[in-house]
Image 1 (cartoon, rainbow, N blue to C red):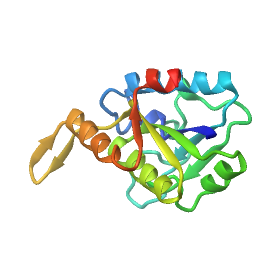
Image 2: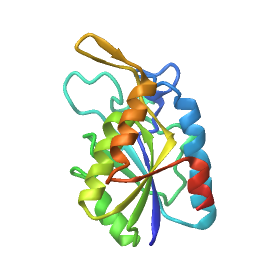
Image 3: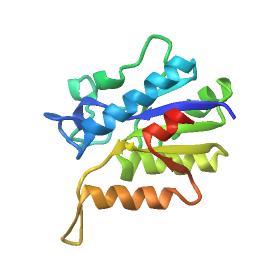
Image 4: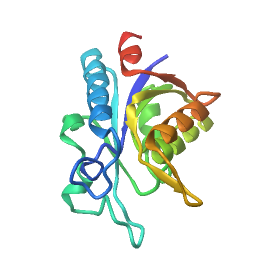
Length: 181
């Protein structure tokens, strides 16, 4: 099985001082960076996904802003593709599937943000496209949510979405488990 690394939306707006700071984003970025180094050392394919907001009223990932840039911790190297998307699903109206096919990738290792949105929709889409998926649990971040006046902590959001993705959509592993594999 040929693995490829998919780093989703690790962009400045999710970090301290950004327009949509996530809980534990620095820790998740560190784990993403470790997995990224491992893939680069192996010469395995790496794909970066960058969300650029085009929806009216969007408040983050605005075009031509510093917040839209990919964070320095996982900055792409020359030759590493950057897939620009405008929807939570990294496959929707992008050439991601074609790039994975061209690289012979049939298993994607996924990390990034936000767990409850872009990670979730991309994993489910990848599964539907016949790809095997591994989610780097500690290499993903999310935020507190509110439902009907009830606050759901980022910790609970993270656990809930990872638990839901674990059967049957993806294997859920730590960064260390991914590096050791």
